[in-house]
Length: 143
Image (cartoon, rainbow, N blue to C red; front, side, top):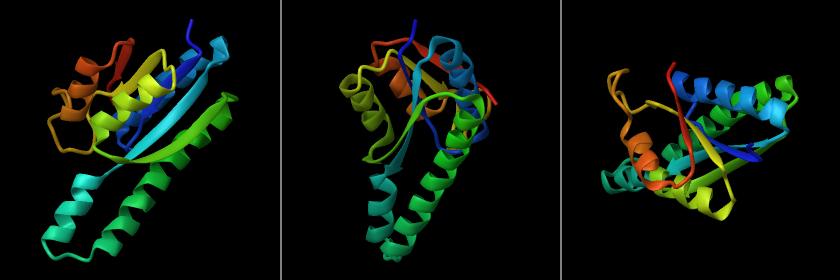
């Protein structure tokens, strides 16, 4: 039985598949699904260091976070599942692992790949690090 399910989402097809899997599990168990988007501070810092306009990038990253979470929330509301919506800044895998530990998460549903551009059959690097680092069950979803 799961009470708290975490779905890290970046809006990719695989993360949306994880949203759907989590909602299918959460509904019958009356679990709460936590949708988490991590704004990668490494991306922001790289842009600032290369002379790009940091504020524009920050706005774009916030917009991507909102879009990814809006879609997840819409699906949860359609399914009648309780949810939390969270945006954090940090290194994605570290933020996800910390969130699991700090919020008594008992299942992580995560896309097998994200927006990193890796081939579909390979595990994404963030996903791989999360799977190796958390001590709760992890459900891998493919698009």
